[in-house]
Length: 285
Ligand code: URA
Image 1: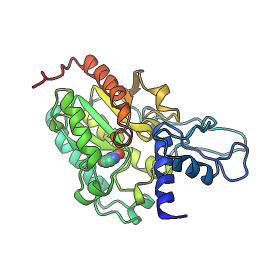
Image 2: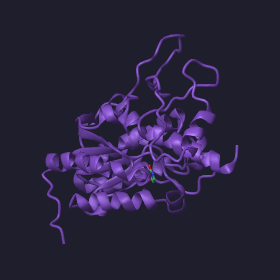
Image 3: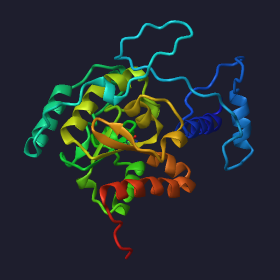
C-alpha cells in the first residue's frame, strides 16, 4: 500500500476508534469493510468519514480476570471497580506523595508486558497534585511523552492544558495519567494484555490520590476504566463510577485535534464536571 494511502487509512481507523468503533472485519466476512473501500472514500476528498455502518463491538475481556473461553460465550468485562476492593483506610494527604513514589518504585524498570520490549525509552508514570480533586486518564504515551517521561506534553497535551485552563484550573492542580505507562509502537491502541497488566498500578494511583472526579479521555480510557466497550456517544453525558470517584467520559484531545468540530461537545462534558466540582470558568480577558 502506498505510504499516503496507508497514512490515510490509519487516520480513518483512528477516527473510528475515537468514536468507539474498534472492530473491523476480515476480508470476505459478512459486513466486511475492504481497505480499498475506505481508501476510496478517503480519496473522494470529503472531510466527513465514509458512511460505513459497523456492527456493535463485542465486549472486552480483562486478561487478569479468570476466563475460560467457550465458543459463543462473551465473558463479563472487568472495570477498575472490579479489579480490587476500594481500600477501607484511605491514605492521608501528607502521605500521598510518598505513596505515589512507592508505586513508582514498585513499577521499577518494568518488563511485565510486551511494551517493555517495543522501543520504550521512558516509563510515563503520571504526574500532578497527589491530592488532586480531578484526574484525567488518557490512553498511553506518544513519542513526546516517551522521550520526556511525562504524560500529555505533546500537541494533544497542549490542548489538554488549554482544556484544564478553561476549567479555571492549573495543570499542577490536577493529576494526569494513562491506561498504559509505556508507548505502544507507532502509537497503536494498547492491547488488552498490556492495558490489563498496567491497570494494577493505575488502580493504586487512583486509590492514593482519591480524586472526586476522573475524566476518561477517549474510548480506550473509558473502555478499561469502566470495563465496557461502548461508543463514546453512549458513555458521554452520564456519570459513571470509578473507585469512589465520579467518572465522566469525553473525547481524547488528539481526536479533537483531528476533528475540532467536536470541541464544543467536549466543552459541554467539562462544564458538567465543573458544575459537579463547583468550579467556575475564569473571566475572559
Ligand atoms: N495521548 C495519551 O493518551 N496520553 C499521553 O500522555 C499523550 C498522548
